[in-house]
Image (cartoon, rainbow, N blue to C red; front, side, top):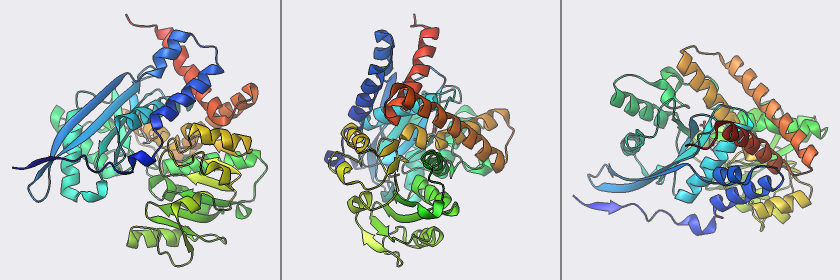
Length: 429
Ligand code: GLU
């Protein structure tokens, strides 16, 4: 049997800014405006636990390949840690650390009783057959068993994973303990305890925040507002669909292979049909082709980066034409770019608010699973909107009170809540 290490997939890494440095810089910036005890500041800066595992997956050709996976628990101060699992060729321990920290602030900002975590496997998900994908997911899940449970750490989907992976994780955990435990993961298919409205929740939440931001600027005619969306995965697709349903003009969208632009507005249902048949937006007939970097600087009112971290940098921030950026992805904007956008008067609705719809409906799913009492989709949407608007309101108030940008205000609100709970609980022992 031949064993090889699957570490040659990490090629684009050099090009991406280090997400953990961005997360720490944002944290340091936020705490400077706060009156927190130094011990509390230092404690919250560190991930609580970090787990690395190398594990085998048998390929369809019989060959066994080794893969590396991570799970980081940044904080468990407000409750069990919560966060997705990502399959991507950019996964590193630093990326997972950053994403775990952002989960802590996100859950705190929207007032969910959770800490923050994230997991990742360094793999190109497109390179796996269905059987290999199942093998990889089940083996990674079994390695995570000492770390996860409905009361300690609850995984969910992220980039490169979805309901099917969650079903395999739920089944692997349940087979190990000997009975079904639906509340071990969220983002499951609805026929095994998933919540109505979870699949579209992140994209829907992005649009709820966009509409709120526009309303506060007095821009209330959707047909006059043009939107560009980078990324046509789970977040971008449902953001585009919901915004299109509300009457906004989606002029540009992209995926990893490239982008498309139509100044008169794209017909999103037909773009989705095209993607269903061709697996990419590229080649869609009723639009001009654009590259991913051109897409970010297209003329538009709202830019929604919904792909991945480190996309808006000091290089392209001076050329962004949007009047508002609503962050669907986690960490799409570097700290240098944040400063440039702020100086240029471009509002950035930060990730931990704008994309919190996903984890919010994950929370509903977890609650429904523990109670074995399920809600209809109208109830899910109503509660989602209530929670996001309340968090938006709190963040906007903080922005004005401290005269800071919206990201700093959101982080301050979130950090304060975790810090207060930490002080109340005390340092053990
Ligand atoms: N991966 C999503 C996020 O980044 C969802 C996490 C969850 O539902 O726990 O927010």
